[in-house]
Image (cartoon, rainbow, N blue to C red; front, top):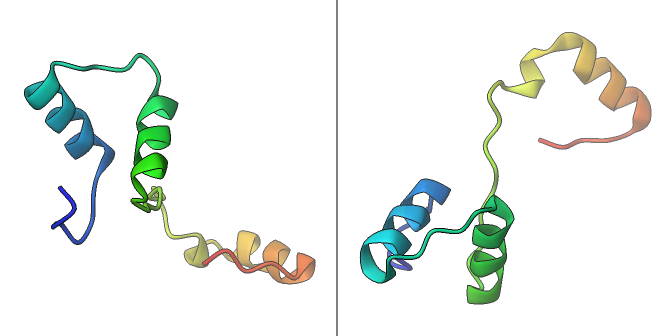
Amino acid sequence: MRAQSYLRLSDLQEYLKKQYDVVFDRLQSYYNLLKEAGITWKKTQKINPAKNEELVKVQKKLGRNYW
């Protein structure tokens, strides 16, 4: 799995199910496992926040830049 340039949570879930017959009840358990393995990830966003003019204005006003 480490050879991949990116990792989706569903990939990890599928791998653990097939290799070890392990299924966690909570998504946080998968995130904890990734963290312990030293694998970083970024949660995807459904929409590009930079395309939301109102959100961009609010973020600029607050001095934040999340993207």
